[in-house]
Length: 172
Image: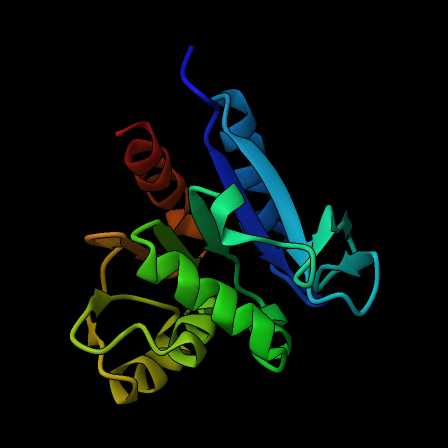
């Protein structure tokens, strides 16, 4: 029997609620295991509306060897995540190991901090377009962009296509 795929979902305060919970539920329905990974500042993080998500692990406990993909939601959470060098390093290592790195909305900020955008085609929420371009990305305004192991989307309305591409990538 094939081993279940496992996705790390990075979390921090001020996350976009749909961009965490919709993927968790879709992955569950597809028999893909998820683990929420927080910065370690607390055990439970609140969305922009206050909806809680409990961290399964802190970034100190997380090991890239245990995951097949990392997903970075948007909201303002990525701005808090990127202040923790180990969060950016985790994303960088997942990328360098050829595993799926997926970011939606403001999640692109973590891709910038991880230093993995040079020469890559990507999208994001339009407000951080300049940040991605400055980091070397070829930015496009598309629902979902797949560039090898990098999967990016713009906003909550793109979640169906975004999560679908992650699932497709994991199922091979």
